[in-house]
Length: 286
Image (cartoon, rainbow, N blue to C red; front, side, top):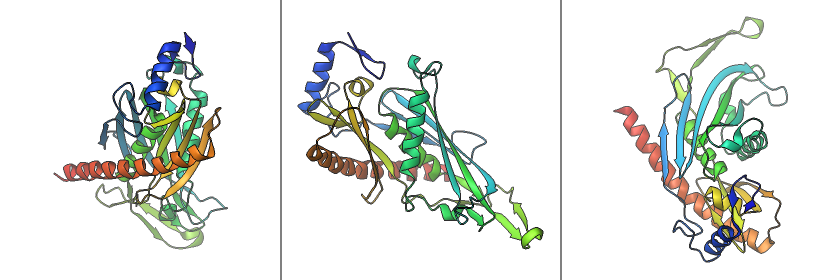
């Protein structure tokens, strides 16, 4: 029996079966290398949040909640708001998350999602500024995994975009100047505004498995991979970020192929996601 870095135990025969399936474009569950599983999505599910979403993909399930508060602006960026993303892997999701077993993965998830939104054209942080040089909105995004079945980064990014899509912020009325300046945050639930998420990216992670690569891997497929690439893809097909991870080396030619596939798959997932979000929005109005 072989124990992989993910904690998933597979026999050598199982590993070979999974690798052969990816290389032959016919994976163990019948999917091709570029095929995603069915995305299940719900929004506005967490009370006492400004926005929330639940995303389920295969055996992986994640909850995302967005809470907003008024804070002082950063002196180095006095004209924009703040976005703080924190990931938490519940011990209920997997036995390997008990104790400190999840710390490294939680840091990786937080860093990848933060990097995904690091580009200035992904989300309009300047819209979160209330008074330049004084106050702004800070969005605290909590990402909680309640089930773990592979492809954590992508599922988290999909749920994150969905949660930001339905995030609403109270209108703030500012009067006076200097030390006499006063801010009044509306408590009217209908006196709110929404973020512009039209350029929000999602993460498409491609895992190198044997001599091939695949998207949306199962937990067993993740265990057979030594190298992977996170690609940030915006709805128009632009690549907003790219980050390689894992111990394995990826050939430059293969890397270019992975990027091409990642962008193509990302565009398609955006279309599906936007369709579902629009449907959720229509239901909310009923």
